[in-house]
Length: 303
Image (cartoon, rainbow, N blue to C red):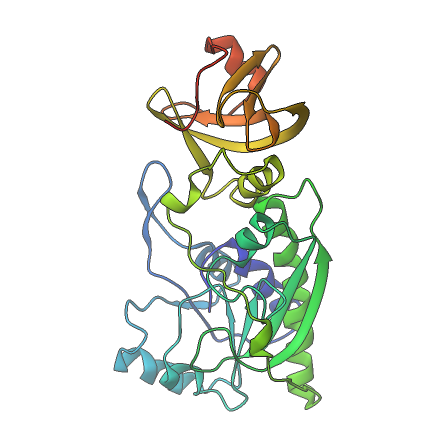
């Protein structure tokens, strides 16, 4: 059970090692992308390539869907980036239901663990498999694997690395369950930290923060859902910035143009803007942007 690209490597690795997957459960086809064309999920596309049946229930409690799952007689359900499952679904398999989570639980429970780990300046994260229980992300841990967060990692690069790391952990978890060797440990709730869903307003940049905090914030939201600020009344998304050692001058968010770069003051120093996208335009590097737009020193971002 899964939806986005993150779940595809786990499906692929289970199939390549001979596990029998009678069905994939994923979200219904919906409008996606800039053109808003009706499109399948990434997991559905992968499943169809393997000739696997695809189930796309709107309601996971629909009796007809639950009856269909019962008819499949699953030994195990594997969940990777999917919706919250009702008890009548996750308790159905005889060996239970396992979930792959993109953090070192109990750290970063919630919908956006990859984003929040980078935004908070973490230098290490990982993946966890655990048995699903009624309360989200609280079940007993089976396996974990760690990976460093590099200073130039963003949410996109870390997502891709964790999806591959997670696939291997899923495979080993299934092997342990199959052979009866799986051991699980209760999570220490005293060590929990949240990773809630991120709204558009949550992505707005605070230029009065220290430069390092702003940089972590931007890379933690890059490339999606994207940190943003206002420039001349338009939304400007920022994808990559670098810390400049020059001290901040003027107010937070104030612009200093120094071709081929431009700097923005933060709470303690300046940031050099590297990759950005102005509302209605494509994403571009700073040099391309400066060729097309006449920025003025003293302008203030964020108003």
